Structure formats: C-alpha cells, structure tokens
Image 1 (cartoon, rainbow, N blue to C red):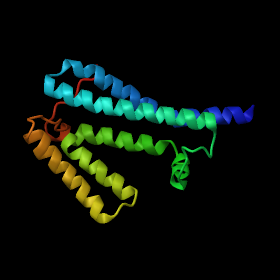
Image 2 (cartoon, rainbow, N blue to C red):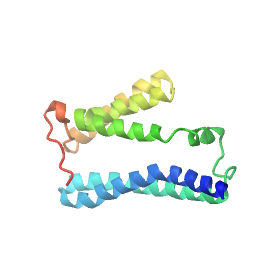
Image 3 (tube, helix red, strand yellow):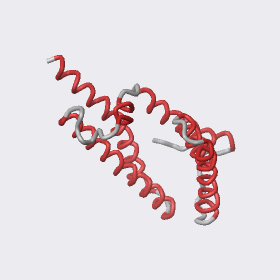
Image 4 (cartoon, rainbow, N blue to C red):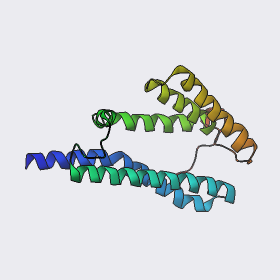
Length: 165
C-alpha cells in the first residue's frame, strides 16, 4: 500500500507543472479570440505550441508512471537527474519569468530569462551570450518592426498591466 501511494505521489509530482502550463495555454488560446487578427494569430499559435508540448509531457509522465522506472522513455542518465530536481525549481523559473514579464516587458524578459537559463545549465559562454542577443534581434526587428506587432512594455517602462479578469 505504501509503495502504491509513493508511485501515485511521484506521478502527481510529474504532472503538476505540465497541467499548470496546459491550463495557462488553454486560457491564452481561448482569450486570443478577443484580439485583433495579428495578435490573435500570435497568441493562438504560441498557446497551441504550449498545448501540444504540455500534452506530450503529460502523456510521457503517465506512460512512465504505468511502465515504472527504467522504461524506454528514460534513455539517458540526465533524464533521471531531472526527475530528482525538487518541484520548486521549475515553478521558480516560471514565476521568475512571469514577474520579469510583468515588470520589464516581453522584449527584455525573454532574452534575460533565456540567458539566465543557459547560464544556470552551464552552457558554453558563447552560446549563452549569442542566443539571447539573436533572440532579441529577431523579436525586435523581425516581429516588432517587421510584422508591426507591439510587445507589452512592462510596468517599469510605462506599460499598462494586463487585465486578467
């Protein structure tokens, strides 16, 4: 009985983050119908990607829970290390991104978050500095200037906070 409870607790622990992301993505997808076409296409496409990724993570965790440890889904030792990461770590990464998004805006929050994430995971320094710079350039010149989409500026730069309800 005790082993069954620990297996269920492990499964729920693995499902919590993908379920939260799925709920947020579904909310963004449904609310994107209220936007203008370009914004709705961007929000709907982004939410669609998140829905697909979170559903695949949910299916992966369910299959892993049914088959148990040592299945073909766990092909690398790094995967086992990620499973032992405390649950607070991915929640803290997501919370830090949301706070940064609210205060400094989308155009700065995403590259800073990617930089911190790559630095945290000890990627090469060239990759850690080049990737956020390229990402910022694509967002600034490709999406904002090229497509004419306006990103949320952040409260610190005069942006109006979003109304959630």
